[in-house]
Image 1 (cartoon, rainbow, N blue to C red):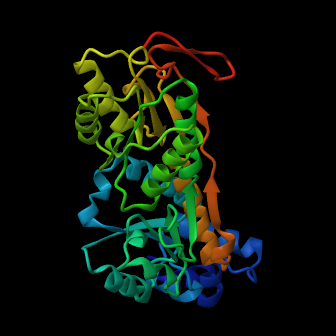
Image 2 (tube, one colour):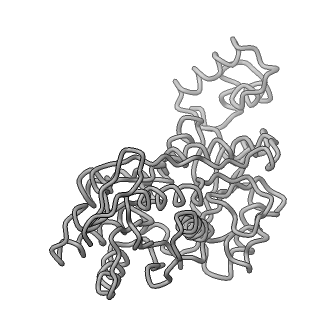
Length: 355
């Protein structure tokens, strides 16, 4: 019976050191010997001790993901697809994924424990850990770290984000070219960097179109159906209601679409609808409106890239070389059209009609 590495070495008539190096991929072991050891380990159902492997290689072959339980991250379908992407890359590279949920105020202690344990080779921080002043400096710990999203305070950390500012500037500008003058923004929670960038892009486009921002047309909140529905109902009750909604997610747009339907309003005949689309498997854009116009960027692909970046950080790639901002294309669909009382040429120039 092969119970440990020494038993396997005796079975192969090799030294334990040679067997250990072969199992852990050390280059000084010949390909022939490595293949012989791996085949014997498989045939004898031998599984190396993880602790011994870490001691031999200095690697845990695992990525850790740190998030706050108070933020209900695992309830968010966006996070679910992000974790799916991370897991896909990890599986392809033979890596494990460890989730580290933490309570508010315990993030710093959790990082110390994780680093000291040697259980992971790199850490991925989910928002809003680096968006909060109290935990913003965790980006600077002496350990490979990758951040999902732009860190709000400009911390020097490897990160992957999308160009939220330019995306929402483009989305707002598209609606303005269609003649809309009352464009509502149903944003995410503005304690987060992504939502602040989206509001900035929205306001920038309004300014370029000669429109004054109206705070009454802005609503910030969680990326939920309830936020989309409640905010849309409230804005549609204004004396001068919006003729277009730009939503922070498909889920929020679904709530807005339900509010429009309840009021007997047509999309896009009465009100245009647009949303950021993270390409969530469980939330296709069509769930909000057929042919929804979207700002599209796959969070699952982002998860795959984040895992790759974590591996590169573990290998010593500097954080400054791993700061990526992805473009977000606007995909025009059937849910946006000219504002009521206007028509447009292909160039986007507006012609006034009866109002």
